[in-house]
Length: 114
Image 1 (cartoon, one colour):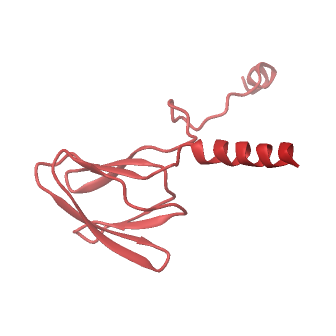
Image 2 (tube, one colour):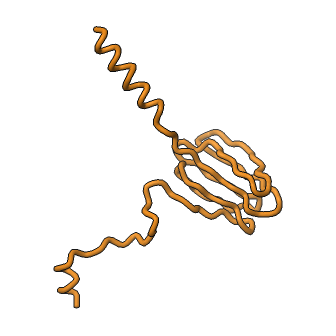
Image 3 (tube, rainbow, N blue to C red):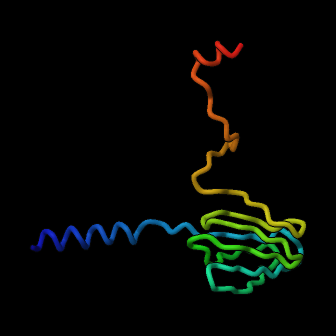
């Protein structure tokens, strides 16, 4: 029984130690921006000062509304920035750095296409 309890507590400790994927929004503009974050039935307003960042709650997806009324659907875990009054998604978890989205064809298939 002690072994089972020890294993269960160890597994719980590992799960709690895993980093949470938080949405991060930074403000690159020289003026503050107020955003509205809608997640499920919850809605909150957040002001991000110039050259600062915030991590609004967006665990299972949310909608970000900027002051100009633009809406952005995010999944959570992204790194985004406000620049020129627009929101740009800079990093999406699980996407390769090259961002090509293309899958290379096997060498034999490439030769047939020519």
